[in-house]
Length: 218
Image (cartoon, rainbow, N blue to C red; front, side, top):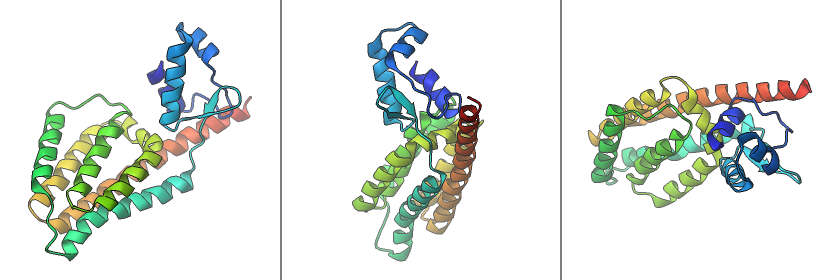
């Protein structure tokens, strides 16, 4: 039920203003109200639903806010590499990065299914990369930003081959940092995040338009 509703919300098949309630979902899926309640709570945590006086309704993503948060994300992540470029005394934690590289090599050899939940795995890479640069405050801010954009970043991994491309790009970034070619790593990371933003905004905009059109036809 959770996966079905998430797919419907992300593809604009649930209209803005439409109410989802435990009784209706229980009847639709032939389940009790407890798993229906749990699925709705998970979708709220994903940022796809919001609680109303009666039931739940889809959250309308704010494209300007997404852009602003992505700009902040880019600044935070690039700062991890930039501070090492500016200060030769700052060295990335190579052991941490080697462990992360092993994890992504395993994912390359056995890619996971194309599904929005991969966003969590992706976040773990970016947090590890920044953590390896040694500034805990930058990491804390990135974790906070990630939580605020996770519900729209899920759209990124609904595009064909996006997971495979992400894995390859992550490995290239790791290899550059481990080789201490920080200028290359900085550019690879900048392009990687920027291209992801383009994909996310395209998918979010499409979903918002579809949901708005459906609501207007009521």
